Length: 507
Ligand code: GLU
Image (cartoon, rainbow, N blue to C red; front, top):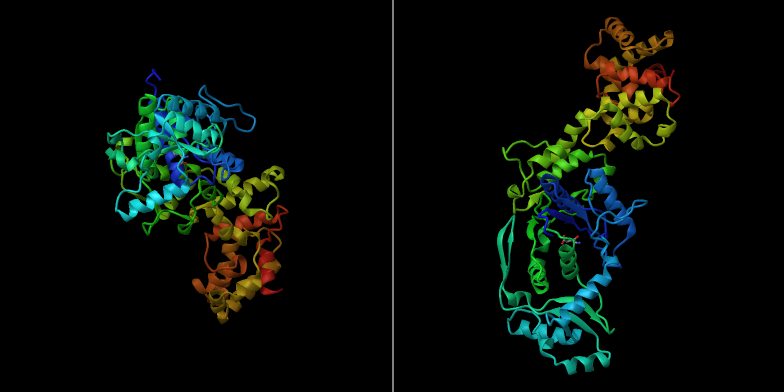
């Protein structure tokens, strides 16, 4: 590319769900491109035919969209055509390009056919091990004559294609780690194309195709996980063999769990889709992913929207040390963004968690939508992620009096004489009343009951709360009561205050 435009890519393999580590890679690439007015390219690395699946490809595109990351060039999606002039953007559709390049390297003598069998290679490895030498390929097939090669091909001998590595050490300047250098012997002659009995070479390997694609797509900066550091010298050697300019590299640190082991399912959710299903907001996740290995210039700001990140982000502030995934911090950010969200948005997101208790959202009346938004607004301050709302708010849809009585804490409260007397008074008032139990009505009742029985404070309120909500604690009663009364009139099967008391006291 001669334009000097920054071009980066995110190159996931569609072999599983998008992991937070890869999502962070995508985010850093995206931020880097957007900040510089460059291009962000999505390339699907689906050469592992056995493990690549369309559903993972679809899911990862959906997850990127959900996070708010768009791409300037990439493969086709559903009804949308492929974007960009450097396609195809799926490696499985680029085999012809790889083959042409392999033939070119063979012709130019930069690569050679290797006829060594797995047994020969194994014997070589074992000997190197016994002699305490590096276990690398000896380069035996480098010097085969044209006649020998021809004869082997005609005899149908399978061959791989290997790159000839020179004597020079292989180095690259990493934007996060500084100069990285590998001695040529440690790299030896890497396989570019796996063994095939065919006249044509077999499957090209990751290091090879990634280099061809990055070069042909004009990628200027390769930002990816540090698990690829040891691959990079091989890729540098491939760039050089083709005479291509080498892009800049930035390798991001590994993400670890709190026990300093590589982050895995053992630590909790790790895929973007599972965080989404749990009711994390995309802006919280994006914000948190940005902080996994990068920090603000002022050393303290921690809340950033995507546009704010685009301004503030810098690869210079990305640390090479491992990042520890801190679920508490993510929860803190999620609570922060929940607080910033409108009740209508939260209600729309929370709807699915109340499946079975609510009508389908599309057919719900305005009154139900508004009521549910109030329910969500009342409980949202008490949750880390939205799927916890259901447990907090379930009592609104009715409680099971027997289960409430069996709860040991409740049982202790209900066993008090004062509780029995208070509940009898409350039931009597409910019986005699035909209207809506507003907070005012309720307050007046509680005052009367206190005066009539002499019971006050916790002894007065706890049994009443248990009867109405199933537990002795919860959000302010002034806010809960209207939701119960309004809910009771919406045909959702939500019992009114009176019905709750009657059911509990057994009138
Ligand atoms: N498909 C590779 C991966 O998912 C991409 C590596 C790279 O960015 O070069 O790890």
